[in-house]
Length: 177
Image 1: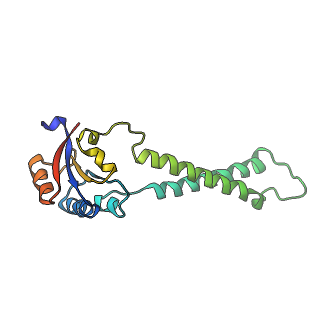
Image 2: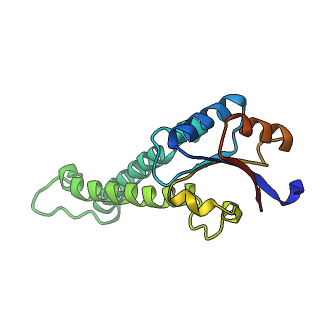
Image 3: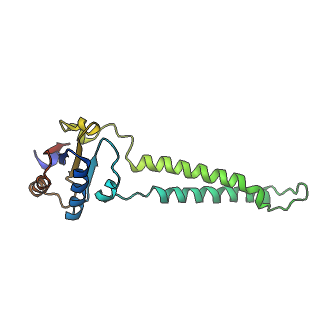
């Protein structure tokens, strides 16, 4: 298959330990554009593949922005836009600002978590080139796959195939686009 029609090379493994070790070895050799497919979550596989999770930082920033925005909105309304002294309370009564500040912090953090996770996972994705692999439906049953993509700078069809075969998978297959 020509390189233009090739998405990558996939190795099929029988156990999750084999997939995990293969991912670690591939990362150590220098492959960076790769992904693992398994029927259940494998703890540490994302780290072994070199994937970084930025969602916690995004959620923190979303919460801080939401809380600061809520506090500023209340302060502006009570101090600048519509200052009315009701019942002798101070104009900047911060204890009364806490419930709304808390609620908007949680709301913005939650929305940031939802949309950030959706965007970082690439969803919704109705099609993926791995679906072209003949036995890939077993990835949701009892098989484990490691795919090294052609867009990886270290990808060379012959050397990558040789490397994947050295990991002793059940088979190595070309993944068409």
